[in-house]
Image 1 (tube, rainbow, N blue to C red):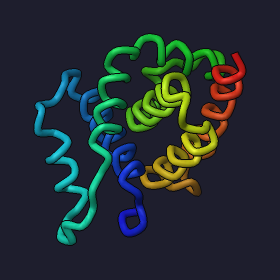
Image 2 (image 1 turned 180 degrees about the vertical axis):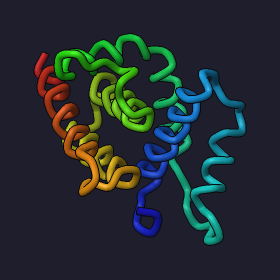
Image 3 (image 1 turned 60 degrees about the vertical axis):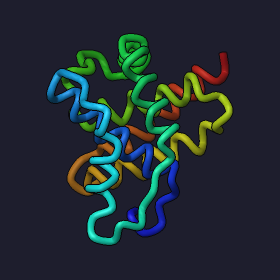
Image 4 (image 1 turned 90 degrees about the vertical axis):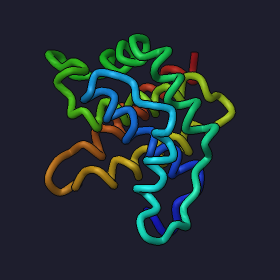
Length: 149
């Protein structure tokens, strides 16, 4: 993903990483976080850039609407499942994607779903687990419900 990723894709990927870190730490990071994450992502090449406005919108939106996003996601989980039972990376990815589906109406749902499914593929090996397919299915169901309303 690093070589061909757009600035928006990088913003989404780094937002998921940031949300994951916040979820695990149970607190919010400092203001320099986006630059630190981008520096790590760039590695030795130093060529990647991200859409900082999108990154900030995702982070602040998830922080503001976290409970609502979790409820929307939990409505589509199998009986007996809830957000704490999900893998922390998957939780972060779903929150970011559902935020965009719900509040970023100018972005087509197909774009949002494809971006986050690709990002899921960066974190999970589909042959070992079903997280990528799971994310795709949940996001598709949520998009059909949210955008149809």
